[in-house]
Length: 414
Image (cartoon, rainbow, N blue to C red; front, side):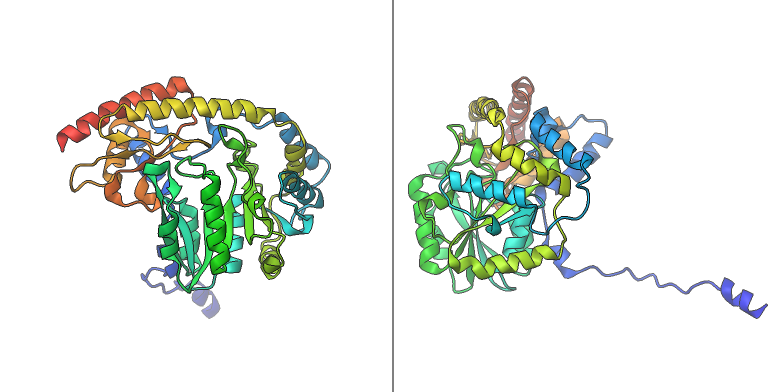
């Protein structure tokens, strides 16, 4: 009887909240965060037109059939278990052969298959950077870089890219950002969020600076096959001995973002041998990237790529429409993108207003969802915001007309 009563006694609880790690407060990702406000707008009955995430599949572009068949065949053949943490041999060999054919001789044992480019970024930075170290990132930047840098306790130092020069990096400003704690130079080319493609002269300057200061270059080349004038050469073609870690994936140029299948290629220089060992050690801790999709890497890199020709043509058409439409809006300027599917227009804001004020007002009044430039590190008063122009031109035209009408009223109300 006594035991039964004891078993029914209520457990004493405290009302105190469970604390969370301090690193969470340092982590921010505006591209996803703003969706919360979009959902609130939708709940009030407004149709939201999403222009915040670069997912080609969401806008009707289809993953090539031979990639789907390769992944499906792998599942049916029973390749559904854990794989080698660095990735299957055939995928690594295909990546190495592709880089070699593009002018960067690469061995398969210097390739890792990753869970998208995002995991590659985190693995590389975690292997290279200690707490308190610094990483050079372009301004504007892709916010995953700054989020990961903050999470691992390092510091981001921004180097400017210049909208007056087609968003090319300001090389002299970059030089002045380097300190004794600087370890990594992030290069996003072709660029997200601006759509810029860097000139050969600028690319050589970035390589020279990295060599001069002993920096590792983290080369985000995921949009390399989406240059409107054709594929953009790998950065390593300019210096095969440069300490470059290159990142790419199936997500964008192969239209399979949800598969989360990417690769990380560690340059051939012996200076990166210890880094390669460290990255592989970190990769062991997460077992492996998704299995069946790895079997599509070979199909992608050795198979038919004709979809890229039509995809680039469609993107170039949308880029022209975007640039012409936005530059016709009084007070707004948009540099013409040269690759990918992003543009970063800038609006001359009234005093006291921020880019977030403008973007949130645009969303609430028109249902058009973009991302404010300060989410990419830009000054809030610069009035910048990123547009994803993957929608069909027939949908983009009324969107840009609505942006123009809203902007005129927004500036008149100020």
